[in-house]
Length: 257
Image (cartoon, rainbow, N blue to C red; front, side, top):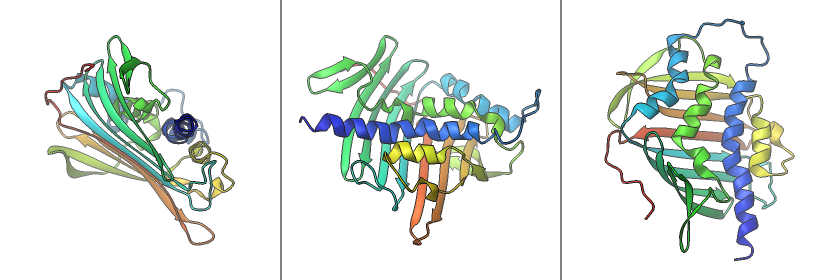
């Protein structure tokens, strides 16, 4: 039991913190060229900007987020070259959320069960829930957190990408596939993900982003971020994050047990 705390801390710094850095990279990608002082957002960009607000207007919903990274030429303090995370949650807007998450660095995994209520955040311990976020702070993997991050960089998306008919959990949507989004801070992201990495330069510079917006009201229902390339030894280097909103309007009971 004494060795578990350092392991959980390393996983926390590696996986959970990487999500915010990845989305910050979107913002940094706009720094190469100056934005007009009074740029007008397109209807597509406005839909991304309004994504968190539309989530809060839903009666309830569930979400699932997965993250995976593979950098075979790298190493961490635990000797791992892969990392992953999976979170599933239920939300009753505006202030009730419950989530279970598993984070994995190499062969070592850690689980967390979290609840957010009007009176605060709580984590499950062996003897019940206690106030606080715990070592991992896996709320960063939640749809509300991710949607907030995307809204903050809405102006960096193309003004009028082509949409394709699709469905998310039976809801009609338009799927937008945006190729070659340059993420300038993705190397810093992987340094955080794996610890001391000497080969972060092997990561791809450009990533594909897929967004699905509901046909009826432009609610953002799914986000995917993917990138891969081969390194000098012909090994596959990759990163992928997926998050989706489902079960809209279902009855959820979100309380401390």
